[in-house]
Length: 136
Image 1 (spheres, rainbow, N blue to C red):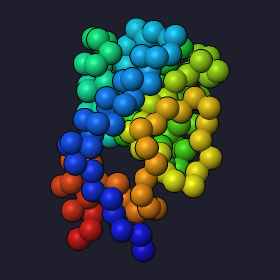
Image 2 (image 1 turned 90 degrees about the vertical axis):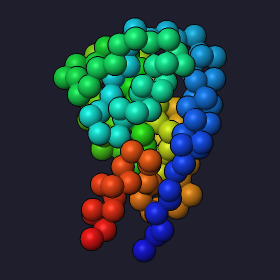
Image 3 (image 1 turned 135 degrees about the vertical axis):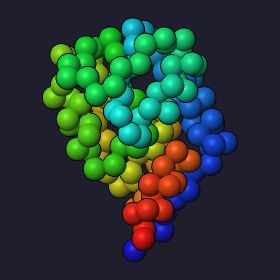
């Protein structure tokens, strides 16, 4: 069984700054951020502050190509596929995560901060209690 990987707030700050640098160097501008109601809320808020984006939407049914999609981790690819199916122009989708599961094939639309250290669960500061409950 793979060990879990705990992420500190300091590491979150560093990853968000690196993602901001990468996104701001692109020629794309975004009207808003779209995210998922669980893991993506905190990274979305942090990136929105860096990018000067005021609007964050959650669990949208349709995602337009001028929206930046943010999540905490690219893991199995199922969430990405779900988001891709809701996008009006999949070729223009930008999907940003702090972590990408090592050993996976990454879509061209993915921008990530770093790969995971192992195949274990990544425990973010905002989901420590949830993780502890699932271990009981």
